Image (cartoon, rainbow, N blue to C red; front, top):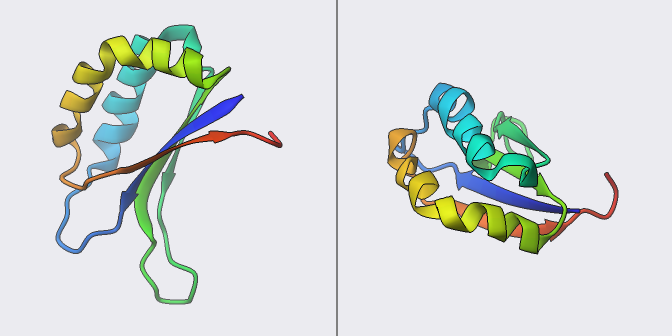
Length: 104
């Protein structure tokens, strides 16, 4: 199993609409990817590593798929539509990573 993570760094003055992300963007991604998206999670940053520090990331999502190939085959045809929706909820440049899930 793999996990595709998209992380939105905390950026002073930046905009991130958590409600839109939760209620519209991620359900759209799931609908477009179909069964290739086994599940997903959304994280909302609360704080950093020390008391009073802001979170490193204001938000993150993690999309689980059987393999990197399965993820790309399902995401690729819809990438333009999915990425085109990003300005509706944020102006932050995301950081992405594909990981192998070792323990789930």
